[in-house]
Amino acid sequence: MEKRARWVLAVTAVLLGGMLWWHSSRQAEPVQVQAKAVTVRDIYNSITVSGQIEAAGSTVLCPSANAVVSAAYAAVGDAVAQGDVLCTLQPDAAATATLPDSVQSAWNALSGGQAQSVQAEETRVLRAPVAGTVLSLPAVGEWVCADVPCVRIADLDSLQVRVQCPELYAGQLAPGQRANVTVSALTDAMFGATLQSISPVAVRAVSLTGTSGEATVEAVLAMSGRTGGLRPGYSATVKIFTDQHEDAIAVPLEAVCQRGEQEYVFCVQQGRAVQCPVQTGYLLESAVEVCEGLTPDAVVILSPPDTLADGAAVEVAA
Image 1 (cartoon, one colour):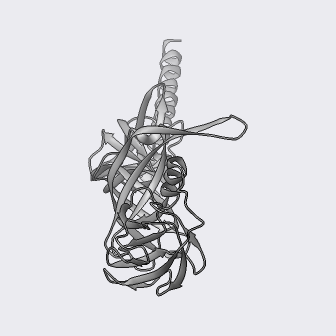
Image 2 (tube, helix red, strand yellow):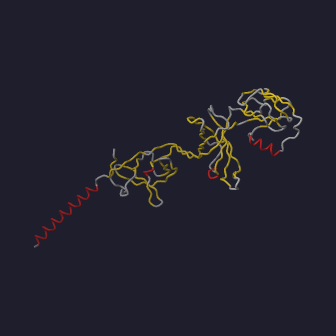
């Protein structure tokens, strides 16, 4: 009886040993995974707003008396030198009234309220007060009013873009920030600009029905580098870079997992999956910035299976 019991125990031990060996051999089989090395690059945060190209500096000319244009010696788009005759005037005795200040202010706003205003010294001639390109000029037979701008000249070698930024993003703007500018008329061209000034007030548009629109903050950016092909009045799309992280670590979106509030990735280290808690930053188009938790030489597992455990053997698929 005792001999039989020993035999049963021996057989049982062999069976259990075989099962343990089989189980451990199964566990040792590495998990097949896809992996990718992290990238190190400069990461930018930006906002995109709409604006309009305009001359950085322009001068408007006001006639000294009410008159009618009798002859023109320049046209819109012409380059003129300071003192060139633009047009001659015929005094109009029938026109004795000047425009109210409110109308004159509205005219100034429509023609570029940032322009410097110059009063004509002669009653029968309008001369170019500065050298530049003619942007507006009255036609022959057109009536001009004393003290109301009728000519505008600008230096088109110095351009800027005026943008309207939604109040949600206005707090991210700061002078000196760089920007990329594109215009519909030049689809393959991109221009550089630098943020110069930000309005201290926000403006809320009101429709005819009394409905208030979104508040916006106006900002002005100076164009830099080449500006060939740009024209004042062009609509522009402006991408302003509001923040920059140099040599930042980025990983594919599918590498980041989350349990509760903790984000983590699995790194491949010596054939094992190592769970690494991380802190993420900016969300990019197909990647995410990792601010803490990874080194530049890390290799992360893409779309790790839910069953993957910390320390599990893995094999990276070719």
